[in-house]
Image 1 (cartoon, rainbow, N blue to C red):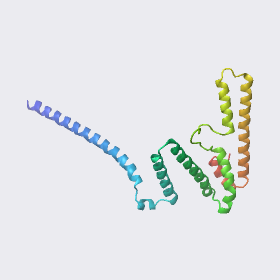
Image 2 (cartoon, rainbow, N blue to C red):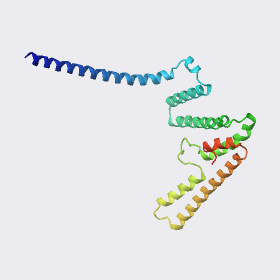
Image 3 (cartoon, rainbow, N blue to C red):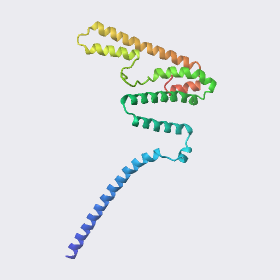
Length: 207
């Protein structure tokens, strides 16, 4: 009887320990979730002392990101959000181009010559995103020819000659883009050093 009672007691104790363990786990998970949420809030409320140790450009980007998120959250219409996104995109592209000055080790005088050519190539390699009404309709000649060809293919009555003509026009548009990019890249390559050229190749602006 004593052995039976002892076994029963041990079983109850184990059950209690399991129940307690489960409560601890659940409680810990809840705390972890709260920690993640509060951590995000704490990051936004980081003290000036903590930010002071960061590079100035990092501080500026953090502040701009915070301001962008705040503006998007407070936007009252889709049109306003699209406008905010377009402005943000322009700033990011300008920043990306300006960062090449440091990567290339270019002086202020050199940069006045290099920058316009980098902007030209960058614009060809990275198409400008469109925002707002009709933004899904790209205005590039290549995309226009693609839309025309798709429209013909969607029409079952389109003739073979029509498809052939549209396909030829699309290939011509693609070839012009290829030639324009090759020319812009060559113009850029002519004014940079070998080390700068290698840096631009690694960044995808030169081939």
